[in-house]
Image 1: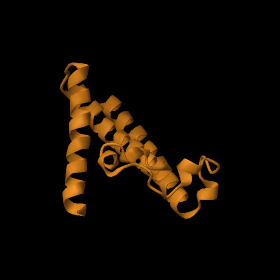
Image 2: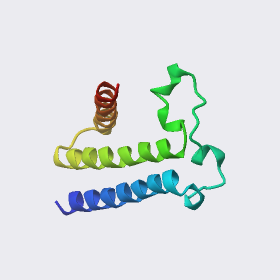
Image 3: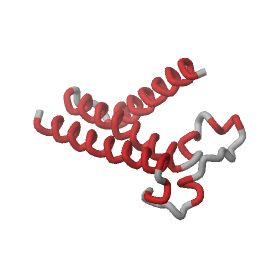
Image 4: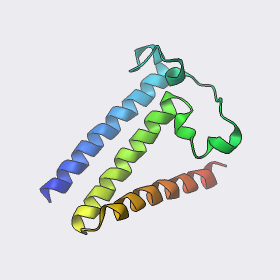
Length: 112
């Protein structure tokens, strides 16, 4: 129980750290973690459309941090579930990928 709480608290702290960096990239890019990296603070898209969906996290720093934020949130949930119901590690990886894919599908349906 204590381990699950620690995982969730650390996950929430990382989630908020990444959330703050996303706002910094958007509103004050000169104060972001990597202000001199053109890709990191860019708002342009340089991938063909067929690469856009599976690799959207590589578009720029904002999307990369968003991806990390989602991985932290989903990863914390998966870790807690795997602690509660001991399973092989590859089931946890499958659950992580499945939840990320499901969230992406819901986003695509509601955004489009």
